[in-house]
Amino acid sequence: MRKLVAFLALAVLFIAGLSSAAPVSLLTAEPNTSTWVCMPIDVSLGNSDWYAGISRSPGLNGSYWKTEGAVASLAVSDAPELNRVVFNVFGNTYKQVSVDLTPWTMVGTSDVVTEFGLPDGTYVVNTAYPPNIGVTFRTYNDLGENGTYGATLPKLTAYTKSFVSWPSQVGRRWLYVVVLDNADFYIALYKYDGTLVYLGEENSAIFGYVRLFSRPVDPEVGFAVIELKPREGGQPGGYEYHPSVLPYGTGVDNLTGAPNIFTAVPALF
Image: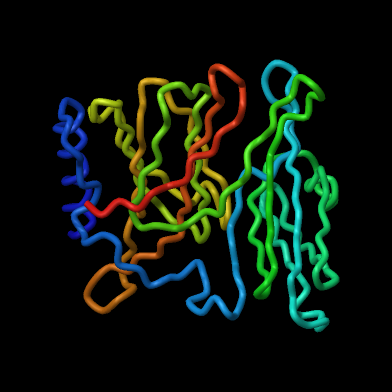
């Protein structure tokens, strides 16, 4: 019965919201209650970060996108476990790669995908590393003098409800959502004036564990709201939220052709 009520509420919101500039509530349940953590609570134990857009693939107009990576160790011990980074790579295939460092040194590669022995494509990477280790990724257009400087890939954060926005001068816009554990979610797209132009639900069954959802975004769209769909049976008598979707947006500067990445911001309405 609860599913039916939620579905009917969603349908009413869709019909009423297309002509309204007011924000819509995608769900009737209480948002932002989490029972799943992406990051360790105690940072002294190390870090577990998610990155997306690790690429080696052709783009438009003869462009070719590659990702550069670097790892630095400022470890205070020679112990191997304090100088090792583990990369869990997800995409068309799964692969785990470990990199051992010498304390107070830095190593890197201009082509992460090739260095990891992966076929061309775009990947999601989880990095696990101890304290005093730093990991950096940068995706760039490898066209020599005609290429761009690239964009540093930010760490992604999981939210129950969040939004991504695009500046007006950015073209070739895409919305991406990293799906960790078969999580269904809703998407609402708004124009710059707040008019709702799309509201839909994405079924994670087509993604599988750790997949990258992608959707092109029209230039008229200024921001997108992404909200995780609740699951029944988690907490006694209610829903259990798993903030296991990590959204972000991309776009290309219309003047310079430089790539841009826009991370999600938590939404509290």
